[in-house]
Image 1 (spheres, one colour):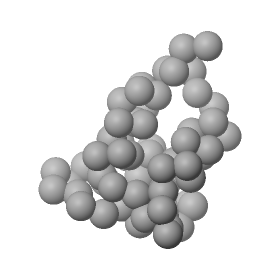
Image 2 (cartoon, helix red, strand yellow):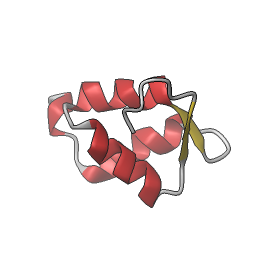
Image 3 (cartoon, helix red, strand yellow):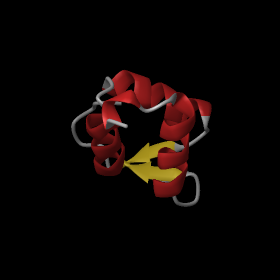
Image 4 (cartoon, rainbow, N blue to C red):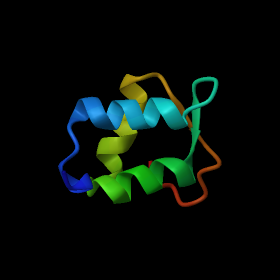
Length: 62
């Protein structure tokens, strides 16, 4: 299966695996987003739904 065809369930699992103490770095979330082939805003929305805060975000992507 191509990473660009990840389901929301699979994306959720990846984000939760990378998040520590309810936080994920911007770089880690960007990498997941790019590998999954989805827009940053969708990953940001997913993180919000999961109550995961994005930290160390210098680019303002999320």
